[in-house]
Length: 388
Image 1 (cartoon, helix red, strand yellow):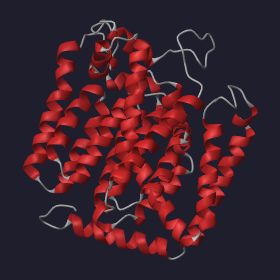
Image 2 (cartoon, rainbow, N blue to C red):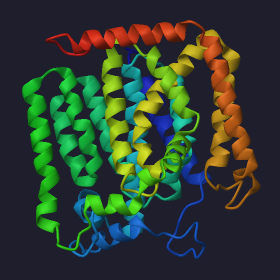
Image 3 (cartoon, rainbow, N blue to C red):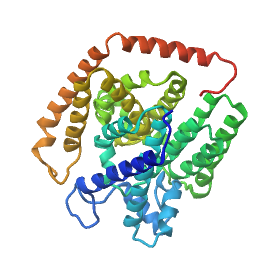
Image 4 (tube, rainbow, N blue to C red):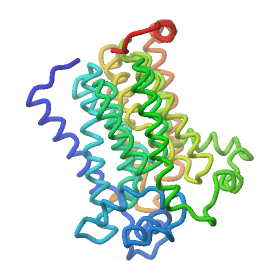
């Protein structure tokens, strides 16, 4: 683990603020006063604004069960939209901060971690948080970042407290709760799972009504499994070549951290798949993978900078290019030509780049996969102990 000095902490704070400032300044944002389809506030935000204004019972499900963020927003001396935006921006800042600190715990230096964060920041569905900061997505992401940091710090009470708050913000948080089992602290694991289940049910008991939609009815209406190819395409496009960067980089993580990262990766992936079965915006559901994608992409960049500096520079160049074709921005507005063929060409270049990365890594990649798989099986069969 890299030792954190005061200068490192200042640098991490500065990097987090820089990402936040550039995101806000670069991406075009929805408003209540815009009449265009793209930039008009709509959808889920309307339900949350209604809750902030005190209309809890009449809000549709599942929004009315996500009580924490609207409650916090109602306490602020701002309009509902401005309150939601402030909470989103604060959440993003602390997300970046905690992700970079978690990378430090993984042994990554701050520069490599910042590049990993850049990869995810420049993606379509992360920049969506700046385009539409009037949702609870970023607060839920912050909760996941705190829980992951608590896992790597072996801080059970932080993990427990954050999990309970997170479930009151967005129910998908509960998917990360069972990961404490990998610590092999069975009583604590059962405790956090049991309490989390109770907290999940409390708002549903008091706020539910006979007209609420059920999971089965929503699943049938969305009909994802009737169009599996479309679903697969949407999942791939949610992160594009970042999927490949992450799935390569994760195998180069330190052995003593790999099992925990793999468990978090799988749990968040399950949460994303489940939620996308009952939601139309598939890519947005997969944005919860942000912390793990940053860590694994940063690890790959650290590996490339040691082996092929040219590929490492291309890594940064492709990432920056991706930011310009991900969301309408101050340079390329809605309907711009770059969101057509150029974005498709860039995706093709990124896929070719992945092939070059695999060639550069050579035999080390299958060797890492074999070694980490053996390590993982050894951990599973180990009767006692805690993952380091």
